[in-house]
Every structure is written in structure tokens, then in C-alpha cells.
Length: 164
Image (cartoon, rainbow, N blue to C red; front, side):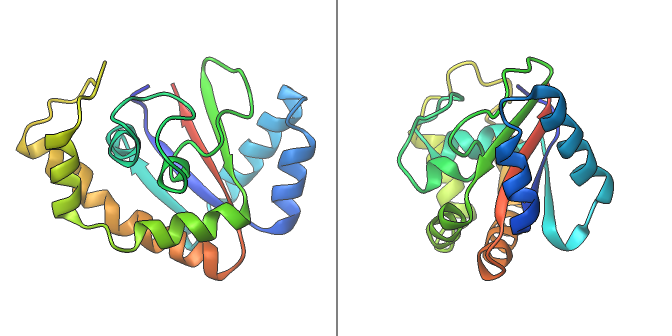
């Protein structure tokens, strides 16, 4: 899982539509494509490949679903995948969870990220873990914090997407 990721803040209508079609893979992917095509820069954040390391830092160092403690555990992969598609990962964070994630992200900074890299093992991590890799990951934290802060302020849910 090392592809480029984007998180989108969804209004109530799109969030409800997403959840109603979670059992229908085709409809789910059509809705995701629709959200992606709109590309609303006010309600998205691009994480490039940093999402992998960020999730690991926010949890226990592993890249799996359901690890770590809420709310940081939900910042990237939410409650887990909405679909079993091996080529495309879609995860969801409810509007209520978004508020908790935003609050948990607030106090974090570049130093915290560096300390997590030093303190945790990252099983199967494909990054180098060197100073450049850490700086790359740190560079995305502020945008992620801004994104969640805005999504919380607007009462929006979040969908994470990444092609694998």
C-alpha cells in the first residue's frame, strides 16, 4: 500500500449516499469517482505517499485496519475499508468521528512525528525511515490538521481513497 492518497470531506448528502451503497461495489466506486471528479480543493487534502507513514505514526506502527487507539487510529483508514477491492481502497470517517480526530491531531507537530518514527517499529514499511523520509511525512501533517479542522467545523464526514 504505497500509492498516492486523497481525503475528501463529504457533505451530508454524499456521506449518506456513500454509506447506502457500501454493499454495492459498482455503485460505491461510481460515487467515489463522482466525488473525485468534482475535485473541490476546499474540501480535500492530498497526502501523496505520506499516508502510509502517517497511519503508522498515528497507531502502533503497523499498516493494518483497526490498530491503534481512537481517535488518531481513524485519521487515515477510518473504521476500515468500505469495499474489498484489491486495486482501490476506500475508507470512511463519520462526521462525529471527524470532530474527535481533528481535536486529537491539533497538538501534534513535526517533533511528534520524528519521535514516533524513532519509537515504533514499522513492519513491512517500504519507506527508508531516514531524515528525508521523516521530513517528507512531517510536511503533510499541517495540511492534514487543517483539513480535519475544516471538515469538523463544517460537520463533514471524510472518505479516504487510494489506488493500490
